Structures are given as structure tokens and as C-alpha cells.
Length: 496
Image 1 (cartoon, rainbow, N blue to C red):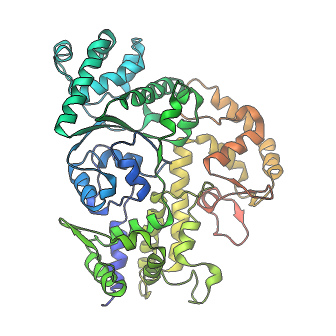
Image 2 (image 1 turned 30 degrees about the vertical axis):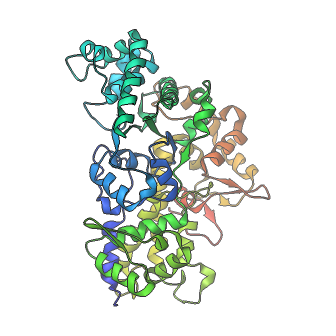
């Protein structure tokens, strides 16, 4: 079987997904959906609390689960997710406009009227569960009458409990489940002080709902929110936290995502599937109009590496024997890991897409779909994307800490080297002023700001932006170092 280099290169460019805030519309063909084992556990209807870093897929799953086409493909291709037709999905809150869920502004108006946040989430539950009787009569009229719905919940605690039991019993008799999805909790309000009680009450109601047999909240949450004592500081929170599931992406999962996508690409899918079947005896499985990779290609890293060699070669150099430069299969992921050894699939996808584009433009006659130099450039681009999405959008204080270090610091280094630069630049004063600014929009300040330079350094370590080596020195993973402009001997060049 001939391996069509140009078709496979085009297949990578057109199919590797951008896992982003998806809104109500997934915006991605279901054939490009891959469910790693840890995600299968998270998608299981019984999993309520789902933890994931930016870019891990929280908002993608929030949208995809509510899409009948995507849910159907997931059910057929990845049965370990336990998503059958008997599971009904509803949206409770997310970063999208919909008449059926309360918006941030609606929530703000309810809070301003002193309505308890807990009652808000119970009203969302009542609406999505289809309460009838007195509830319907009381809130009859506009579907957007959230004040009326919340007030009914406040005034009718016994009626609420009775209807919840009735709905749960009816679902059990029909053999069905109801899962209500919540995402983008950092966008519940404009300030962190307003978000905390809303997020805390949501987790409380999510825990309460676990007393039912057939109804569940599924809440997608950032890790730092689950470390905030003002959010998780309620009775029995440990019961919920103990059952949380993390959206992790191992190396084997990232390459499985790549092969799932390329195998379904319009340009190179058929050629790639035939090559995999004939060369490695690992055929794709037909699912409706699309294809799913084999179990072996999902789990066998040795098989994956052999296939990626066909795509990117044996070494990150012009010489096939130049293994000192690293093997592309491991090199790519190693340079995209953060300090917690996690890789965002968005970073991985961006690096591959840029590598395919760069090979097409700079090395069009290359004998393989990806050139090693283009992969290096792809990692640089992915680093910039990672910094923009995680740091500049969610944690602007990190940018405040990094600016004085750009072009000055080479890692690994001692904490004293970093603290000396920060002291000279007066970054702590700048951070303190930002934290005390009442007009600042919702952005988490450093949790250990009151502990000084070592405190904010520990915060960076907690985010995975830096890591402490066994000898006590500070290292910065390439996925951040490159875009922040720090040097490292023998490493990928930083961006200028």
C-alpha cells in the first residue's frame, strides 16, 4: 500500500481539532471526537464533578454531550462512556446564550434581589427535570421568568422535594437517566467575590442530587476552583471531591486523538486507514458514516510510535540515527508538558497543525508528511497559544511575574535569582494594587500573595508554570518558557 505523503499532510491540517469553548454548537465533526479512558469515566452519567485544566476539553464535552449526533457516535465508538439512548442531557449553565438556561446577567439580577444561590440551582433542576403541577401553574407565562421559578423553590421546599421524588421515580420506571451539565463557572459573575457563593451552592446542590437514583449534575470545573476554600468549604464537600474525575491526556491518548482524526479526514483518511490496516494489521471500525480507531491503536504505544515514524521519521534531526536529538513521538509531547506533566490537546493539535502547514510551505518535497524542523516551529506556536489561553486570559498576574524575566533569565536557576529580579521590578506591589482594585474583572489573584516572593513562586508551581527540581532549582517547561522568552541551554529557542 502506497503511503500518500501529501494526502496525509493535508489530512493532518484539516482534521486535527481545536478543542475550545464550543458554545451550544460543537462546531466539530463527530468523527474527530476521541474519548480517552479517563474521559470515558468522566462522561459516565454517574460522574458529577469533572476537573480539567484549560484546553482539556471541559467545554467541548459540555457541548458534545448535548449533541445527539456526537452522543450517538460516542456511544457506538466508545461504549466505556456508558452513554446510551436512555441518557437524556440538559444544559444548566455554560458560556453560551440560550433561552432555556439563566445567563450571567439574569443570575446577577436574582442575586441583587437577595434570592439565595442555592434556590437558583434548585430552580434550574426543577426546570430541566420538567416539574409540573403547582410549579407549572406558579411560573406559567414567559419561559425566561427565572425570578418566578426561584421564588417558587424558596416558598415550596416540600413541594420541590415531592416533585423531585416523582420525577426520579418516573425516570427509574422508564429505565432512563437525566444528566444536567454545568460549565464555565468562572463566568457566573464579574467578580470572584460574587462567583464563590454561586459556585459553592452549585456544588452543594450537585451533592444533594446524588441522593436521587436517576438524576445527576455533571459539573466541569477548573482545578484552582476546587482548591479555593471559600468554594469547597461546606459540609460533606469531601464526599463530592473524593469522587471527582480528572480530564487527563496521556501521551497514548494524544496520539490516539491524532490517528482518530487523520483516519476520518476527507483528504487522507482512506489512504491512511488502508496503510494502517495493511502495514500494522490494525483496521479501523466503521461507525455509521465514520470510522473509529482500533483498540490496539488506542492503547499500544509501541504501535503508535511505529505509525508516527511513518509520519515524522525516527529522529528530530536530518540523520535517522541522530537519536540524541530525540524521537519525534516522545519529543513532541515532552516539549508540550506543563509542570504537572499535563498536556493540553489544544496545544498538541496546534503544534501538529502548524507542523503540517510549515512542512507544506517550507519543505514541500519532504519524503514524510511532517519535517522535524516544522515540528519544532509548531511547538513554538503551541507555546504561544498555551500562554495566551491559560495565562493571559485566566491568570493575568502570571504575565506580571513573567515580564521582568523575559530575555534576562535562563533556567534552571535558583529561586534567589528570580526573587532578585522581582524585587527590583517591584512586582509584589503591582500585584497587590491589582488585587485591591474593585473594578478588576473576575481573575483569580495569587493565593499566596501575602507570603511574598516565595508565595507567588509556589503559586506558579501549583499552576504548572514552573517546577522545582530535586536539587531545589527552578525549571520552566518549554510549553511556557518559549513564549515567555526565557532561555535554556540546549532547548528550543524562546520567542522574541
